[in-house]
Length: 336
Image (tube, rainbow, N blue to C red):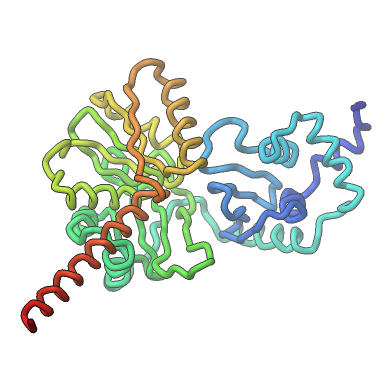
Protein backbone atom coordinates (compact mmCIF):
# COMPACT_ATOMS: atom_id res chain seq x y z
CA UNK A 1 0.00 0.00 0.00
CA UNK A 2 1.45 3.33 -1.11
CA UNK A 3 1.50 6.53 0.88
CA UNK A 4 -1.62 8.65 0.49
CA UNK A 5 -1.40 12.26 -0.66
CA UNK A 6 -1.46 14.74 2.24
CA UNK A 7 -4.82 16.22 1.23
CA UNK A 8 -6.40 12.73 1.25
CA UNK A 9 -4.87 12.00 4.64
CA UNK A 10 -6.40 15.19 6.05
CA UNK A 11 -9.80 14.16 4.70
CA UNK A 12 -9.36 10.73 6.33
CA UNK A 13 -8.73 12.30 9.74
CA UNK A 14 -11.86 14.43 9.34
CA UNK A 15 -14.21 11.48 8.70
CA UNK A 16 -17.03 11.50 11.25
CA UNK A 17 -16.67 8.61 13.70
CA UNK A 18 -20.47 8.66 14.03
CA UNK A 19 -20.86 8.19 10.26
CA UNK A 20 -18.34 5.36 10.15
CA UNK A 21 -19.92 3.62 13.14
CA UNK A 22 -23.42 3.82 11.62
CA UNK A 23 -22.18 2.59 8.24
CA UNK A 24 -20.65 -0.45 9.95
CA UNK A 25 -23.81 -1.47 11.78
CA UNK A 26 -23.15 -0.12 15.28
CA UNK A 27 -26.25 0.97 17.17
CA UNK A 28 -25.97 4.47 18.63
CA UNK A 29 -27.70 6.14 21.57
CA UNK A 30 -27.36 9.80 22.54
CA UNK A 31 -26.22 10.49 26.13
CA UNK A 32 -25.63 14.13 27.02
CA UNK A 33 -23.08 15.61 24.64
CA UNK A 34 -21.85 12.18 23.60
CA UNK A 35 -22.98 9.20 21.56
CA UNK A 36 -22.70 5.72 23.05
CA UNK A 37 -22.24 2.52 21.05
CA UNK A 38 -24.63 -0.08 22.43
CA UNK A 39 -23.15 -3.36 23.67
CA UNK A 40 -19.59 -2.09 23.35
CA UNK A 41 -18.50 -1.86 26.98
CA UNK A 42 -18.95 1.87 27.55
CA UNK A 43 -17.60 3.19 24.25
CA UNK A 44 -18.45 6.87 23.80
CA UNK A 45 -17.98 9.29 20.90
CA UNK A 46 -17.76 13.06 21.19
CA UNK A 47 -19.30 14.16 17.84
CA UNK A 48 -18.06 17.74 18.24
CA UNK A 49 -14.39 16.88 18.81
CA UNK A 50 -14.68 13.73 16.66
CA UNK A 51 -12.93 11.77 19.39
CA UNK A 52 -13.83 8.54 21.20
CA UNK A 53 -12.89 6.58 24.30
CA UNK A 54 -13.90 3.34 25.97
CA UNK A 55 -14.58 3.70 29.70
CA UNK A 56 -14.13 -0.01 30.39
CA UNK A 57 -10.59 0.01 28.98
CA UNK A 58 -7.88 2.27 30.43
CA UNK A 59 -5.27 1.25 27.85
CA UNK A 60 -3.76 3.96 25.65
CA UNK A 61 -5.24 2.25 22.56
CA UNK A 62 -8.83 2.72 23.78
CA UNK A 63 -9.24 6.31 22.66
CA UNK A 64 -8.41 8.71 19.86
CA UNK A 65 -9.72 9.77 16.47
CA UNK A 66 -11.22 7.94 13.53
CA UNK A 67 -7.98 6.13 12.58
CA UNK A 68 -7.53 4.78 16.12
CA UNK A 69 -11.21 3.80 16.16
CA UNK A 70 -10.81 1.57 13.09
CA UNK A 71 -7.55 0.10 14.42
CA UNK A 72 -9.10 -0.70 17.80
CA UNK A 73 -12.49 -1.97 16.67
CA UNK A 74 -11.30 -3.96 13.65
CA UNK A 75 -7.81 -5.00 14.73
CA UNK A 76 -6.13 -3.29 11.78
CA UNK A 77 -2.70 -1.72 11.46
CA UNK A 78 -2.50 2.03 11.01
CA UNK A 79 -1.78 1.64 7.29
CA UNK A 80 -4.71 -0.71 6.80
CA UNK A 81 -7.03 1.60 8.71
CA UNK A 82 -5.98 4.66 6.71
CA UNK A 83 -6.49 2.96 3.35
CA UNK A 84 -9.88 1.59 4.41
CA UNK A 85 -10.95 5.09 5.44
CA UNK A 86 -9.67 6.52 2.18
CA UNK A 87 -12.04 4.15 0.37
CA UNK A 88 -14.82 5.15 2.79
CA UNK A 89 -14.53 8.79 1.63
CA UNK A 90 -15.69 7.80 -1.85
CA UNK A 91 -19.10 6.89 -0.47
CA UNK A 92 -19.26 9.46 2.36
CA UNK A 93 -17.51 12.64 1.19
CA UNK A 94 -19.32 14.83 3.75
CA UNK A 95 -20.71 14.28 7.26
CA UNK A 96 -24.27 12.96 7.15
CA UNK A 97 -27.22 14.96 8.44
CA UNK A 98 -27.35 12.62 11.45
CA UNK A 99 -23.72 13.37 12.31
CA UNK A 100 -24.30 17.12 11.86
CA UNK A 101 -27.28 16.93 14.23
CA UNK A 102 -25.20 15.15 16.87
CA UNK A 103 -22.44 17.77 16.48
CA UNK A 104 -24.90 20.65 16.94
CA UNK A 105 -26.49 19.05 20.01
CA UNK A 106 -23.06 18.31 21.53
CA UNK A 107 -22.00 21.95 21.17
CA UNK A 108 -25.22 23.21 22.71
CA UNK A 109 -24.88 20.77 25.60
CA UNK A 110 -21.32 21.89 26.32
CA UNK A 111 -22.43 25.50 26.56
CA UNK A 112 -24.66 24.60 29.50
CA UNK A 113 -22.28 22.15 31.22
CA UNK A 114 -19.75 23.61 33.67
CA UNK A 115 -17.63 20.46 34.09
CA UNK A 116 -18.62 20.01 37.73
CA UNK A 117 -19.77 16.65 39.11
CA UNK A 118 -23.39 17.03 40.24
CA UNK A 119 -25.18 14.10 41.95
CA UNK A 120 -28.74 13.67 40.61
CA UNK A 121 -31.53 14.93 42.82
CA UNK A 122 -32.92 12.33 45.21
CA UNK A 123 -36.46 10.98 45.01
CA UNK A 124 -38.88 11.75 47.83
CA UNK A 125 -38.82 8.04 48.73
CA UNK A 126 -36.91 4.93 47.70
CA UNK A 127 -39.84 2.59 47.06
CA UNK A 128 -38.99 1.99 43.40
CA UNK A 129 -35.39 0.92 43.97
CA UNK A 130 -36.32 -1.30 46.92
CA UNK A 131 -38.96 -3.03 44.79
CA UNK A 132 -36.52 -3.43 41.91
CA UNK A 133 -33.50 -4.63 43.89
CA UNK A 134 -35.39 -6.88 46.34
CA UNK A 135 -38.33 -8.21 44.31
CA UNK A 136 -37.01 -8.16 40.76
CA UNK A 137 -33.33 -8.79 41.42
CA UNK A 138 -33.86 -10.96 44.56
CA UNK A 139 -31.23 -9.11 46.61
CA UNK A 140 -31.49 -9.53 50.39
CA UNK A 141 -33.35 -6.50 51.83
CA UNK A 142 -30.82 -6.34 54.68
CA UNK A 143 -28.03 -5.96 52.15
CA UNK A 144 -29.91 -3.16 50.37
CA UNK A 145 -30.74 -1.46 53.67
CA UNK A 146 -27.10 -1.54 54.72
CA UNK A 147 -25.94 0.41 51.66
CA UNK A 148 -28.88 2.83 51.80
CA UNK A 149 -28.03 3.66 55.42
CA UNK A 150 -24.40 4.15 54.37
CA UNK A 151 -25.67 6.64 51.73
CA UNK A 152 -24.06 4.50 49.02
CA UNK A 153 -27.36 3.74 47.27
CA UNK A 154 -30.28 6.07 46.68
CA UNK A 155 -33.16 6.57 44.26
CA UNK A 156 -32.88 9.60 41.99
CA UNK A 157 -35.82 11.72 40.84
CA UNK A 158 -36.06 9.63 37.66
CA UNK A 159 -36.38 6.47 39.81
CA UNK A 160 -32.97 5.07 38.85
CA UNK A 161 -30.73 3.22 41.28
CA UNK A 162 -27.81 5.53 42.08
CA UNK A 163 -24.68 3.65 43.22
CA UNK A 164 -22.22 6.07 44.81
CA UNK A 165 -18.44 6.13 45.11
CA UNK A 166 -16.67 8.20 47.77
CA UNK A 167 -13.09 9.42 48.16
CA UNK A 168 -10.87 8.90 51.20
CA UNK A 169 -12.46 11.91 52.92
CA UNK A 170 -16.02 10.66 52.50
CA UNK A 171 -16.82 13.06 49.64
CA UNK A 172 -19.00 11.62 46.89
CA UNK A 173 -17.03 11.53 43.64
CA UNK A 174 -18.89 9.21 41.27
CA UNK A 175 -22.32 7.74 40.63
CA UNK A 176 -23.38 4.94 38.30
CA UNK A 177 -27.06 4.78 37.40
CA UNK A 178 -29.21 1.75 36.66
CA UNK A 179 -32.81 1.99 35.50
CA UNK A 180 -35.51 0.17 37.47
CA UNK A 181 -37.74 -0.65 34.51
CA UNK A 182 -36.59 -3.54 32.31
CA UNK A 183 -38.26 -4.27 29.00
CA UNK A 184 -37.58 -7.72 27.45
CA UNK A 185 -35.50 -7.40 24.31
CA UNK A 186 -34.52 -3.80 25.04
CA UNK A 187 -31.26 -2.70 26.61
CA UNK A 188 -31.93 -1.21 30.08
CA UNK A 189 -30.81 2.27 31.01
CA UNK A 190 -27.29 2.37 32.40
CA UNK A 191 -25.03 5.34 32.76
CA UNK A 192 -22.38 7.17 34.74
CA UNK A 193 -23.13 10.67 35.99
CA UNK A 194 -21.14 13.21 33.99
CA UNK A 195 -17.80 14.26 35.47
CA UNK A 196 -17.69 11.23 37.80
CA UNK A 197 -14.16 10.38 38.94
CA UNK A 198 -13.41 6.78 37.89
CA UNK A 199 -10.85 6.48 40.70
CA UNK A 200 -13.77 6.02 43.12
CA UNK A 201 -16.24 3.26 42.15
CA UNK A 202 -18.89 1.59 44.32
CA UNK A 203 -17.18 -0.29 47.19
CA UNK A 204 -17.54 -1.96 50.55
CA UNK A 205 -14.37 -1.24 52.50
CA UNK A 206 -13.20 -4.21 54.55
CA UNK A 207 -10.34 -4.65 56.99
CA UNK A 208 -8.81 -7.89 55.74
CA UNK A 209 -6.21 -8.72 53.09
CA UNK A 210 -8.56 -9.74 50.29
CA UNK A 211 -10.63 -7.81 47.74
CA UNK A 212 -13.38 -9.28 45.56
CA UNK A 213 -13.79 -7.54 42.19
CA UNK A 214 -17.11 -7.28 40.29
CA UNK A 215 -18.21 -5.65 37.06
CA UNK A 216 -21.35 -3.94 38.42
CA UNK A 217 -22.87 -3.06 41.81
CA UNK A 218 -25.83 -5.44 41.31
CA UNK A 219 -23.39 -8.33 40.77
CA UNK A 220 -21.63 -7.40 44.00
CA UNK A 221 -24.89 -7.18 45.99
CA UNK A 222 -26.04 -10.49 44.50
CA UNK A 223 -22.86 -12.25 45.59
CA UNK A 224 -23.21 -10.84 49.11
CA UNK A 225 -26.81 -12.08 49.17
CA UNK A 226 -25.70 -15.56 48.08
CA UNK A 227 -23.15 -15.65 50.90
CA UNK A 228 -25.91 -14.94 53.41
CA UNK A 229 -28.23 -17.54 51.90
CA UNK A 230 -25.65 -20.32 52.04
CA UNK A 231 -24.88 -19.56 55.67
CA UNK A 232 -21.50 -17.94 55.02
CA UNK A 233 -22.18 -14.90 57.16
CA UNK A 234 -19.03 -14.75 59.31
CA UNK A 235 -16.37 -16.32 57.08
CA UNK A 236 -14.22 -13.67 55.38
CA UNK A 237 -16.46 -10.98 56.83
CA UNK A 238 -13.64 -8.46 56.55
CA UNK A 239 -13.22 -8.83 52.78
CA UNK A 240 -13.15 -5.73 50.63
CA UNK A 241 -15.63 -5.52 47.73
CA UNK A 242 -15.40 -3.32 44.64
CA UNK A 243 -17.68 -2.90 41.61
CA UNK A 244 -15.92 -1.24 38.70
CA UNK A 245 -18.91 0.17 36.78
CA UNK A 246 -17.80 -1.91 33.82
CA UNK A 247 -14.20 -3.00 33.99
CA UNK A 248 -12.32 0.31 34.27
CA UNK A 249 -8.84 -0.54 35.52
CA UNK A 250 -8.23 2.80 37.20
CA UNK A 251 -10.73 2.16 40.02
CA UNK A 252 -9.13 -1.14 41.02
CA UNK A 253 -5.57 0.17 40.73
CA UNK A 254 -6.37 3.18 42.89
CA UNK A 255 -8.12 1.05 45.52
CA UNK A 256 -5.14 -1.29 45.75
CA UNK A 257 -2.78 1.67 46.02
CA UNK A 258 -4.75 3.15 48.93
CA UNK A 259 -5.19 -0.21 50.72
CA UNK A 260 -1.68 -1.67 51.15
CA UNK A 261 -3.01 -4.41 53.45
CA UNK A 262 -4.55 -6.22 50.47
CA UNK A 263 -2.63 -9.28 49.28
CA UNK A 264 -5.28 -11.35 47.48
CA UNK A 265 -7.35 -10.19 44.49
CA UNK A 266 -10.36 -12.37 43.64
CA UNK A 267 -11.88 -11.77 40.20
CA UNK A 268 -15.67 -12.31 40.22
CA UNK A 269 -16.57 -11.10 36.73
CA UNK A 270 -19.05 -12.60 34.27
CA UNK A 271 -18.71 -16.24 33.29
CA UNK A 272 -18.71 -15.71 29.52
CA UNK A 273 -16.15 -14.91 26.83
CA UNK A 274 -16.16 -11.11 27.39
CA UNK A 275 -16.00 -11.66 31.14
CA UNK A 276 -13.00 -13.98 30.82
CA UNK A 277 -11.27 -11.45 28.54
CA UNK A 278 -11.96 -8.61 30.97
CA UNK A 279 -10.66 -10.71 33.88
CA UNK A 280 -7.37 -11.32 32.08
CA UNK A 281 -7.04 -7.63 31.16
CA UNK A 282 -7.60 -6.56 34.77
CA UNK A 283 -5.04 -9.05 36.05
CA UNK A 284 -2.54 -7.84 33.44
CA UNK A 285 -3.18 -4.21 34.45
CA UNK A 286 -2.54 -4.98 38.13
CA UNK A 287 0.56 -7.04 37.31
CA UNK A 288 1.95 -4.29 35.11
CA UNK A 289 1.51 -1.77 37.92
CA UNK A 290 2.78 -4.04 40.74
CA UNK A 291 4.56 -7.15 39.35
CA UNK A 292 4.30 -10.18 41.64
CA UNK A 293 2.72 -8.27 44.52
CA UNK A 294 -0.71 -9.93 44.56
CA UNK A 295 -2.15 -13.42 44.60
CA UNK A 296 -5.00 -13.86 42.13
CA UNK A 297 -8.01 -16.16 42.30
CA UNK A 298 -11.30 -16.60 40.44
CA UNK A 299 -14.89 -17.01 41.60
CA UNK A 300 -17.37 -17.62 38.79
CA UNK A 301 -21.14 -18.11 38.82
CA UNK A 302 -22.00 -21.68 37.90
CA UNK A 303 -22.99 -22.38 34.31
CA UNK A 304 -25.28 -21.73 32.53
CA UNK A 305 -25.56 -18.51 34.53
CA UNK A 306 -23.57 -15.62 33.06
CA UNK A 307 -23.43 -13.42 36.15
CA UNK A 308 -24.07 -13.50 39.88
CA UNK A 309 -27.54 -12.01 39.66
CA UNK A 310 -28.69 -14.63 37.14
CA UNK A 311 -27.51 -17.30 39.58
CA UNK A 312 -29.20 -15.56 42.51
CA UNK A 313 -32.51 -15.27 40.65
CA UNK A 314 -32.35 -18.94 39.65
CA UNK A 315 -31.73 -20.07 43.23
CA UNK A 316 -34.48 -17.78 44.55
CA UNK A 317 -37.03 -19.14 42.06
CA UNK A 318 -36.08 -22.75 42.85
CA UNK A 319 -36.54 -22.09 46.57
CA UNK A 320 -39.88 -20.44 45.92
CA UNK A 321 -41.02 -23.46 43.91
CA UNK A 322 -39.89 -25.80 46.67
CA UNK A 323 -41.73 -23.75 49.30
CA UNK A 324 -44.94 -23.78 47.24
CA UNK A 325 -44.61 -27.52 46.72
CA UNK A 326 -44.17 -28.04 50.45
CA UNK A 327 -47.31 -26.00 51.18
CA UNK A 328 -49.28 -27.98 48.59
CA UNK A 329 -48.11 -31.28 50.06
CA UNK A 330 -49.08 -30.15 53.57
CA UNK A 331 -52.54 -29.17 52.36
CA UNK A 332 -52.92 -32.51 50.57
CA UNK A 333 -51.86 -34.37 53.72
CA UNK A 334 -54.38 -32.47 55.85
CA UNK A 335 -57.22 -33.21 53.37
CA UNK A 336 -56.26 -36.89 53.33
